[in-house]
Image (cartoon, rainbow, N blue to C red):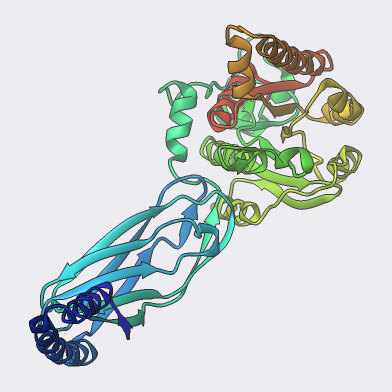
Length: 435
C-alpha cells in the first residue's frame, strides 16, 4: 500500500489550519474535527482498496517484432470491483526501452474492462524480455493506493524487417510486378527441358528426341530454356566498417533487412536464396534453396547477427566460396568502403570471386554528406566542409568505376532506400541475362 499525493496535501492543510489556531483558537478546533473525519476516511479507503480493489491485466503482442518499425502492444485491463476505481498502469518494458514511457492513467467503472494500445520501435535485433504489468489501484477517496503485479512475463524476438516485403518488390519495380521476368534462352549448360516440338531447318541435330520421332513418324526435337531457379547468395560483411549507425540502426541492420527482402523476392520469382555472413571468418552459411522453409530459416539465421570489431577477412571469404559455392551464383555482397584505399586492399579477392560468379557489391553513400555538398557556403568553415563532402562523393564514385573496370557490378545506396535499390538491381541483372 502507498500513500497518495492527495493524502499528503490534506495532511499539510490540516497542519497549517492547526498552526493557525495559535492566533485564532477556533481554527484549532476545526483542524481537530477535520483530522477525525480524515482518519475515518483513511480507514475506509484502506478497507475498500484492500478488499474490493481487484484488477486483472494481460498483455497481447506479436511473437515476432519487426526491426525498425512500430510494433503494437495491447493491454487488457478488467476490474472486478463493485465501485469505480482509478488506475495507474505501468508496463515493465525490456531494458532496451528504458526511456519509453509506458505509463497510463485510466478510470474504470464497476466491473468494466478497457484496452490500452501503444507501439514500440526496436532498433536492435535479438530477444526482448517483458516483465509484469504493474497496476496501482485507488478508490474515489484517493488517499491510499494499492500496488498489484499482474500479467505474465513475456519474451519476444526482434527479427529483420519482414513486413511489407511484397510492397518493397512493387516499389522497386515501379508498380509493374512483371518487369524483369523475361525468359532468356541459353543453349548449352544450365538449361532445363521445356517441351517437344517439330523439327525445323536449323535446329541442332543433337536435340532430336528419337523416341518421340518414332512415335510421330516425323522428326521431333527437345526445346530447352534457361534454368529458372538461379542461386542468389547474399553475403554480409560483419566487420567494424558495418558498425556505423544511421537513424539509430547500424549499417549491418540495414544490410540484413535488405538481404531478407531480396531473398523473399528471389524465392517468389523462382530463384533460390542463400546466405553467408563473415568477419575475420565465415560464421554463417545457408546454401541457396527455394524450399518453403528457406525464408524462416533465413530469418532465424539473421536475427541474432552482430557486427565484430575485427576487419573483415576477404581472403577467407574467397577460399570459403570456392570450396562451398560450386554452382554459378549471383553473389550480393553488402559492405562499406570508407575510401578507395580500403576497397583496393580487398579488390584482388573480389576479382578472384568474380571470375567464377557474377558479383554485385552493395555499399553505402551518406545522405548528410550529399546534403552538405549541395549547400551554398558562406563562411570559411562551410567552404571546407563542402570541399570535404565533395571529395567524399568523388571517392565513392571512383570505387564504383574501379569495380566496374574489373568486371564487378556495384550499387551505391542510402541506408533507407537500400532494400528497394537492391531489388531493382536484381531485376535489372535478371533482365540483362546476367543471371
